Length: 586
Image (cartoon, rainbow, N blue to C red; front, side, top):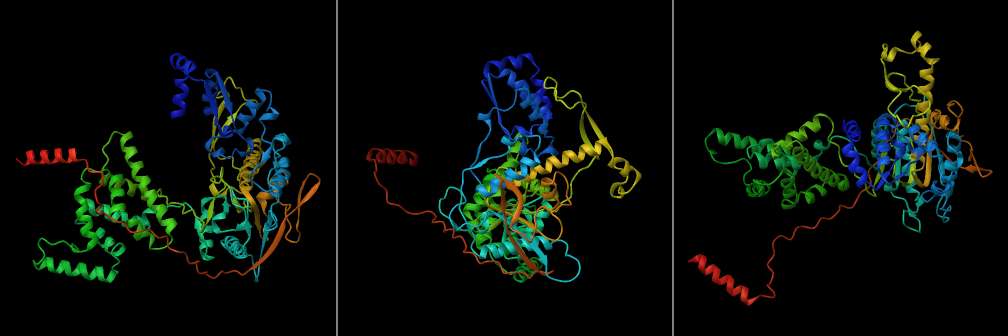
């Protein structure tokens, strides 16, 4: 592991001496996500540097599954005597005042171990012009039918349809950097989910509602644009690859499948009869002829260079853009280009040869492992769908916080790092800690067993629950603070357990918001905050809506080589050139 090796390297007197001479300033960003081994490295470096600056926000430590330990940051803060008032962020420049006040009210209570002045912010943005609506919104969905409340993906369908209705009403936002409001577009909206699986459900629901979703997902090599690019590269590698020829005829030349099959059968019949000894199937197709002409140029090119050559000379982007959903498809083309560079960098690190055939095999391995991630397709016409974790550091005018019905994810099973004392020894960060690995012998059948009853009253279970509550409170803080103009909280008959736990100090059975009131339980500066509540009635099933028609992005046709009149001819150079040509001719 690189971190372990670096930590050992810093123990070398020679290395420490060199760093002490050359290291003037150490800057540690996102300090709240530091793991114990990283803190050990940073502390060693800080002793060698003349100055050090540590920047972080313990409220945004959300990577516990990667080993981040926010208690380490608190230990550092206590060690230096607390945070100076001048070093505490005072203002929020992103969100409207209503959102900032809601965050203050919720999380000064949810983070009791952090002083209130380190949690609460003052809003720099006012409520804005009259075109803007209430910054806090509560969408409540009621089942307009009989029987039990529908299961998944009913909630996701409700969110998608409600969003479509709100966008059609022309809700206004103020884009970042602008001063005047404009009607919101799908790209102004982000729907945050707890898991990638929920993101997929939301994306499908948006598609059903006639909206596009910007979401990163696997399956790049199964898309039509990737298949066309791969077919061209495979044909460059092997001109007798009939499957690649068929895909080129289908995708690039626009032939029907029936026409391609008939053409192939005719070719095979002629070959069997000896009429096609030297002929090549579809050798007279303009696209195939263009690829044949390019083959000679690719002999000494790398895989990335071959890919770029095909894109430019064959104008593949123009063909791909004509299929619709241009932003997503062109993003996928860019991902293919990045993958070509990643493959070459990997070969360079391994001191192995990079080739076009190797690149194709490398891509196939990515596909087999579901690692061929598509481009997100972000743009004004697509709703952003991503997890709370991936939203960190980003912002949108409208944020919808989904997955609020989720149960607490507190588990004592698996690997955990146990610290023997509550206080962190900064002189021995990695000491007094050990790994605990508990295996669940009952798997999914653990509920109501004797072991489950004993564990539920144990100290490890209490510690796991407390840790999970703190982690999910920080995660919700990250999600809510992504909103600039509107924060939307969706709900239905089932309780928003996650929000309830954060607001009610771990108690999830007491509802936080009421569908029958515009008042929230959140109080700030002596006033209860208003939240605009709207009740939507939806049936069990949702009809498929027609997607909005988009203008196709126009990609101009390449001008190609042109004849231009020569200017500023140097007579002396011309005479020299003619003389040299004559000598060479002799």
